[in-house]
Image (cartoon, rainbow, N blue to C red; front, side, top):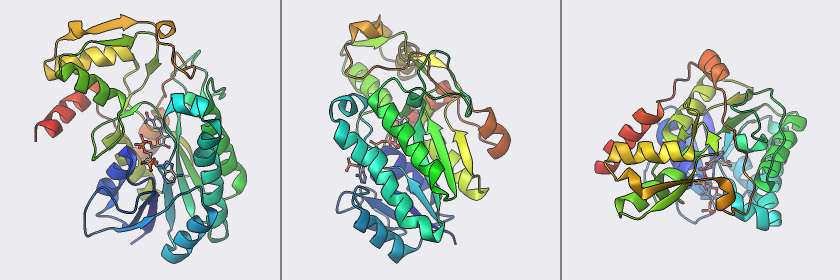
Length: 297
Ligand SMILES: NC(=O)c1ccc[n+]([C@@H]2O[C@H](COP(=O)([O-])OP(=O)(O)OC[C@H]3O[C@@H](n4cnc5c(N)ncnc54)[C@H](OP(=O)(O)O)[C@@H]3O)[C@@H](O)[C@H]2O)c1
């Protein structure tokens, strides 16, 4: 059985990766916390802060993985704009540490990047389109891609877009924010000018499962296929869950005063993943119905 080390395993994607891979791979889940949030006797767990090179080296030497999946990141886009050093430490230095600690063993690194590396003038984007990040988070994620590309190790860079879903003690995501507010009858303001291809986290984990099975090396986009703005997604959430859509007020980004500039037309084209991996994500509507079933259990 191939040995797979997952970083950021307590995050939204990290948790879904454990569930998606546990039957086919020998897993070592790692995260900053002392304990995993998912409890299962069938995977091993070790604390790991990827910003600490010695920890990376020790964990890699002990476990000797065939593949590392880096799902650890500083993911708060607005916080990255003000806490630039912390963003760089997690999103670039952490990746450098993983690269250097695994280089001699030529371990495959699967790293997760974002559509925020593109300027949003002309999305959705293909893998070979020119990056031009509008915000610090995007700049750091692009820098991490470049570290990996220059390293000489076998790698897969998986770019994704607006990841959403449910998990154990996870940070809020766009779906959860809309769901929790509308469920309580609270009004929300949502932008009509930020387009992405929102990605159900379970589909993203399944896409990475396909990458491992092949195996696939290079850059690949794994996201949903619906190109929608946030207001459209919020209305679909309301419709699917039977919430009042009049609670959602459409606004534009200039009314929001977000710390970090956003790409307006971002999102990703996934033709390569469809052709090379047989990746077929659920539609946005199917994903929301799936979440409704999950949340009612
Ligand atoms: N969420 C999105 O919309 C989105 C969109 C595009 C790309 N992505 C990318 O997808 C990947 C997974 O994101 P996600 O949605 O699963 O985010 P998430 O729920 O915020 O998970 C990220 C995890 O990384 C951990 N982490 C942060 N710094 C760390 C460090 N120095 N060492 C070890 N772990 C650390 C965090 O742990 P703590 O709890 O300890 O902070 C958190 O559990 C990231 O690379 C992200 O950039 C996400």
